[in-house]
Every structure is written in C-alpha cells, then in structure tokens.
Amino acid sequence: MVGSGRPRVAIIGGGPGGAQCAQRLADAGCPVTVFEARTRFEKACGGGVPARGMERFPFLHDTRLQEIRRCLVISPSGREARFPLDDPLFVFGRADLHVLMLDRALASGVRLVRQRVVSFRRVGGGRDPQAGGEGWILRAAAPGSVGPGRVATPGQDDAGTETDPFDFLVAADGAAGGARRRLVAGAPRKDVSQGLGYYLPQVSEDFITLKFYDHLHGYLWVFPRPDHSSAGICATLGALPAAELRRLMDDFLRGRYPREVLDRSERYAALIPGAPSDPRAAPVQGEGWALLGDAAGFVDPLTREGIYYAMLSGDLLADALLRRRPEEYSLAWTRVCAPELSWAAGHGGRFFDARFIERLVSLCAGSPTVSRVLSDLIAGKQSYRTLKRRLLLAAPRVGVQLVSRALRQRGRGDVPKVAPIRPARDS
Image (cartoon, helix red, strand yellow):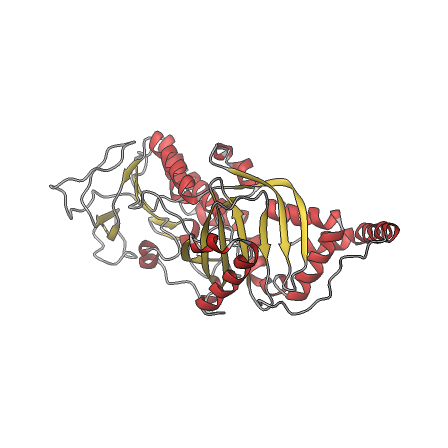
C-alpha cells in the first residue's frame, strides 16, 4: 500500500465477509472490486445469525428473515428438552443473505465482477504470491467489465485480459477457495468439518432442532426458513464416512417428517473450517493480502457458526485498511475473538461428550435456569470460558427448581419423565 490516496482493493468472494468489507471500504471512498461468479448460492449452513450479530449489524433486519424463539435439543439417547430463547435466533436463507449483502455493497459504489479469478500475481514479483511487489494483478476465467455500483456484462475485447494493479488483495472465497490455497497452506483435518444436508420443502416449524450423537464431534440441525427448512449434520472431517453421516441424518428426518419431504429435498455438502486451538498456527495475512471469514478459519469450532465471524472480520480488516495499518487486522482479531474460539477448539471433546450432553439436556428439561444458559449460548452472549463457572454458581437454584418440579409432578400423580441413559438407536 503506497501513496497518499485510498488503497485500491480486490476482494475475491462476495459472501458475508467479503461484501461487508467491500461496503465499508467503498463508503469511505476506496475503489473496491469484488470478484464473485455466483449469482445465488447455498451451502451446508443453517443460516442462523445470533442476537449479538443482529446487535452489531442491525441492517440485517429484513423481511427475508425468520425469527425463531424456541429450541428443541435431543441428547444421544433420545432425551428431549424444549425451551424458549430469551433472545431470538434469526435465520436467513443463504441465497437471500448473499443478495442482501451484495446489494448493499453495490449501493455504496463497489465494482462487482461476475467472474471467477483463476490466478493472481504480484506486480514485479512473478508467479509467487509471497514475493514482494507493489500490487496485485488478477486474471479471471470469463470476459466481463463493470463500473462502480453495476454488475459485470460480457464483452469480447477483454477475454482473458489481466486487471490493472490493486494495492491490496483480500481472499474471502471460503475454506476450499483457490485464492486461500495459493496464499496459505491447507488447514489440518482436525480443524475442518464435513457438512451434509438437505433443503426440506414445505417444512415450516417455529423452533430450531439440535440433535447430538454418541462419539460424534458435531451435531444435526434443522433450521426453519421462510419457505423451507435447512437440515444438516456436521462432524470432524474423516471421523465418519460421508455415507454414515448421511444415514444418521436420513434416519432422523424420516422419523420426524413425511417420507415425501425427504424425497423432494435438495442435497448439499461443503467443508466447514474451524478456528484452531493455537491462533498462531496459520497466518491470516501477509504483505499486501489478508484472509476473511471461512477462508481464514474464523468459524466457531463447536457450533460451526460462521456468518457473524465473517462479517466481523470484514469490519476489522476495513478498519485496519482505512487506518492504513493493515498489520493491525490480525492483532485486532486475536484480541477480540481468538481467545474464545481457541478455547473452544481445545475443549471440544468435553463439550460433545455424551455424558455431558445427557446431563445438560436432562437439567435443561427441568430447570429454567439451565435452559436460560443454553439460550444465552445460542445468542452468543455466554462465553465458553465462563460456562462451567456459571453452571456451578447456579447449582443451588437448579437443585431447588428440580425438587419443586418433582414435588409438583408427584402432587399431580405424574411420573417424572426422566429417561434412563441408553445407547441411541441411530448413534
């Protein structure tokens, strides 16, 4: 980044992180070009935005949102707990979110090119992207040109031509993106999850479903959206064959919905990154470049939530670039988010332990205090690092609630609905 003017920025990928960064920079007068070949897309994602995300990005309130205020959690043995969400979970169809974010960027003057970037190089640095240079030149796969605030249209004179130099390059093309792979080494398998799922047509519910399995570092979800539901399952890459993950999900869905729903559904699959236990394990920026969102591994390794972190990383990078101190981006991420996500990555085995999940679901079913803790976790307002302490401090109140519940049931002649812990048939 040289000179006194605003930097010319190329962003590869127009998802939530790339679009948010582009919009912020363009609003400040930076010339920004986003390369995004997809017009509408979905992915292995529930599409949930927690309350903290809506508070930071209030423009996300949109008619295309589904507001969910109830949750169903199912343990490995099949024990269930239903509870209200004190702060609603907001669910987007990913295609709708993609359009909303790019429309905002275009309105701010971002130049959008509907082309896939196939290569890039340093100005004066040859083919090595790590070599020094004064900027970046990109080459796209298909012809097209575009002005600020407009979408690219095909042309014949610029087929295969390279771009003019950019001062800064942003890779926001996801965990499996080509730009990311050229800039940094691939993430270890333990930090990557396999996600499989369906779009279930005509399935409309007013609650989210979270189903856990024995010996599975992951979970199954069903998130309702305005015109369908997104159902999926995730697990550490290689822990189970994809066919076995698909079987677990199919068995669960066929047990809860009419068979024709699954027969008419559309499948999806994707790799889901996760933040590493050591935030220094992989670089997220270098001289003249940076990674955003999934490309940087900025995903909760437990919930696999990524939308909020992608948009937050877009904000942090934009702030650093506008200060003309891009090196402060990774420092800001380390200060704001890395401690929480790194802790989660190092303690995932305990969180997904079947005995812990069974106890948590049982307590949640009988204690409003415990269900409030889970509600705060879903909203992003409960830190993983203080979760154990909060549960311990709440133990006396939880005990009183459980005794009161048992006495009420006995007075009514009810049999307490506490199922024995047993292996799940589908785990």
